[in-house]
Image (cartoon, rainbow, N blue to C red; front, side, top):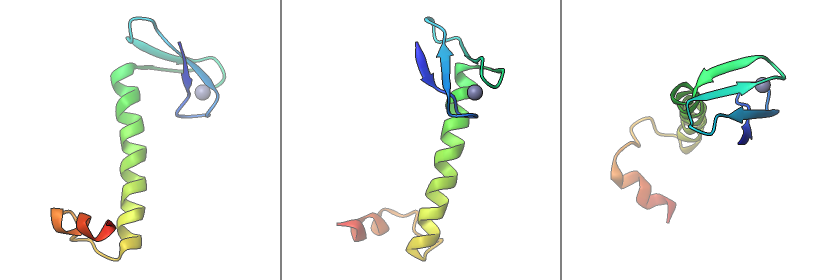
Length: 69
Ligand SMILES: [Zn+2]
């Protein structure tokens, strides 16, 4: 199936058995597990930015989430 390439943002191909992600645009080839970690890493960086924006590096406790209400 078609998925978004995490590298060049073009169409990548996910194998039907979820074993391999390939992108012909940038010659990307990684396992689906690596793909998930790649995405998770990107999300983690995004979360860090949000954390900085909230002005607290100790906001990983459940208490800080209440402030979003
Ligand atoms: Zn690509």
